[in-house]
Length: 286
Image 1 (cartoon, rainbow, N blue to C red):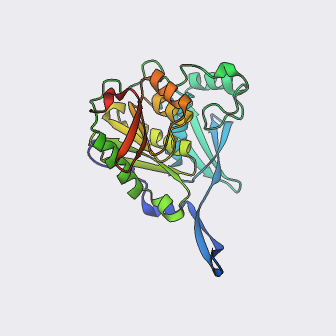
Image 2: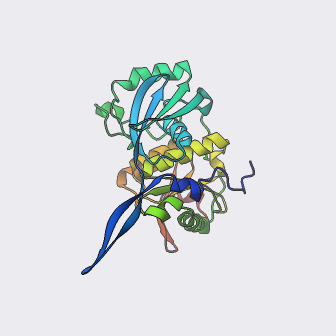
Image 3: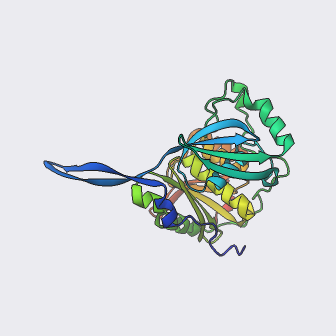
C-alpha cells in the first residue's frame, strides 16, 4: 500500500446503511413541523470466539470485520493479527453475531480470563471484578509488538489538517449528528482512513482493525479522534503501538498518566488552530 493514498475508507453510501428514518416533529417556539429524521442505528453485536460467546457490544453496523479484529487486538485476546484465522458475520433477528476463529493458544488464554472479566465493556476496565485487573502496564503493547517509538517528529500543522479532514469525512455523523470517528493520518496530516461508530471506543477499535488488515506500521502516521481522550482511548492507542493520539476534546488525568507511562504522545483540544500537548512532546516539532 502507498502510505500517501487513502485506504479502506467507509463511503457515504455505506454510512447510510447504518441509519434509519423515523417520524418526528420539529419544534421552534410555537411552530411545529411534522416530518422525519435520519437517526444512527445502534445494534447489539455479539463477538464469538471459536464458538464461545465472549461479549456483546452496542455498535454501528459498519466495518464489523475491522471492529472484531481491532477489539480482539486491543483487548489482548490475540497477540498478532495472524492469530485470527477467519471472521464471519451473521445477521439475526436480535442483532449481529461476529464469529471469529482464533489460534488455540489465544483461546486457552481467553478461557482462563473469561470468568473474571465477564461483562467487561469497551471502556477497558468496566465489568472486571477485582482491582487486580487494573494493571499499571495496562497500556503497553504485547512484547515484540510493533511500536512507533522512533517515529519522526510531526509538524503541529499536521494535527490540525488531520482533524479538519476528519470532520469532512464523517459521513454518518453528517447524516445523523450522533456518532464519533477515529482517523489515521500520514505524517503530513493527510487523512488515510476513517472509521465511525456510536461509541468512541468502537470507532477506535475499528480503526485499529482496519490498520491491521492493511498491514500499516504504527510509525507511518498518527491517530485522531472526535472525542475526549479518556483512559480506554489511550489504552487502545498505546496497545496498538501508536506513537501519537490527537483528540478534539480534553483528556482525563488518568489518561495522561497512562500515556506518559506508555510512551504515547497525547494531544488534546486540537481545534481552532490550537492544541495542548500532555505527554512526550518530543514527537511534535517545536
